[in-house]
Amino acid sequence: MRRHVESSLSVTVLQSADVVLSLALAGNLPRESESLTVTLDGAPLQVTEIVAEDGLTRLHLIEGIPAGRLEVRYDAVVDGRAEPVPVTPLDRIVYTRPSRYADSDTMAPVAQAQFAGLAGKDLLDAVSSWVGSQLSYVSGSSRPTDGAVQTYLMREGVCRDYAHLCVALLRALNVPARLASVYAPGLNPMDFHAVAEAVVDDRWCSVDATALAPRSTMVRIATGRDAADTSFMTTLSGVANLETMQVGAVVEDGLPGDDVTELAQLR
Image (tube, rainbow, N blue to C red; front, top):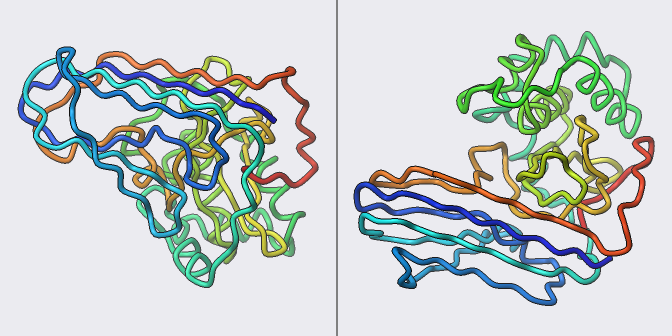
């Protein structure tokens, strides 16, 4: 499967800033081509790549950016699929704990009441279906600080909110679960997308309760406990305001269907 992805950001830096980008594809993907360009008022800036210990998430750090107009562009072509990501002993610990946006300890009574007696694929299907039926997808409805509990109470949100609620419910039932940011061919409107991943039969399987794009075409960017680990841009210091953002993702030979009853992996 050959997939083309791209993204661009325009940022106004008001005060000397350190910025981290999470736009590049995961390190295990077979990239046919890849390009990251970062400029300030047209002049190229030095960028440092930082790779997570698992080799998946690739961050790009830009330090000491003076005031001005920061422009970022990323393009890549993926030809083929990555090898499945293994489930490590550390994964089973880290991704079963509560985290900032996936407050599974608070959601435990809901999870136990809704999904008692279910396990494995049956549990994954039930959680995805329930979250998809309980929430309404409403752009701009959630705040950057909202986690799974707020999403459960408000019953609306965007992709990250759907993913956080899935992750929290699964962790509450002792299933390792995490969030992945992805490029998602077929997504409409096009944007960065977020999905959950959970361990079933010793495999990381993707869960997208929004059902807005085929899981088989999605391309992993970053992986973490929740959105705090996978944000496409983080300002570590100074003041930098995002002005515009564009995202594109297409797959050659047309979009496949997505049978939500089948297990799928991000590859």
